[in-house]
Image 1 (tube, rainbow, N blue to C red):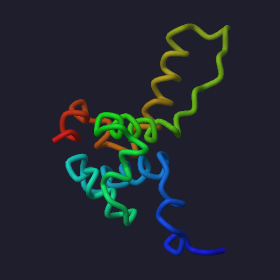
Image 2 (cartoon, rainbow, N blue to C red; image 1 turned 45 degrees about the vertical axis):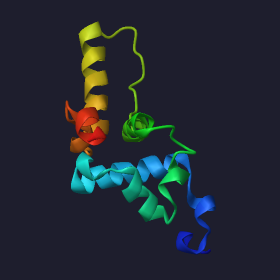
Image 3 (cartoon, one colour; image 1 turned 90 degrees about the vertical axis):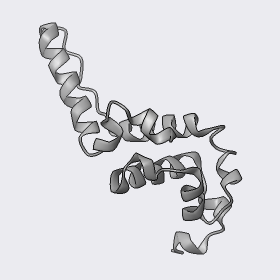
Image 4 (tube, one colour; image 1 turned 120 degrees about the vertical axis):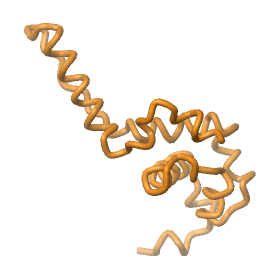
Length: 115
């Protein structure tokens, strides 16, 4: 199987791939490191190529947040459990999805990422 580096950029570039790389970058270097220019360099394309997938930086930030929550696994609904038990299970699932991405979980994530 060919390495993805051998494929043309257009075949590798997708909304999901851009968001996943943005999330990896935020995890490794903080949200301030996430820029359209930096992501474009990673994929070997011009920054304008990313705007085909994300209209603006706000949409990119939303895409990265969605990527972080892709691993969220909601617990099964159990009507016999008290609501507090169900709420706790939901919060534990949320924390399990967010814990690996502390930069994205920050309360000022959108503001810091937009700088």
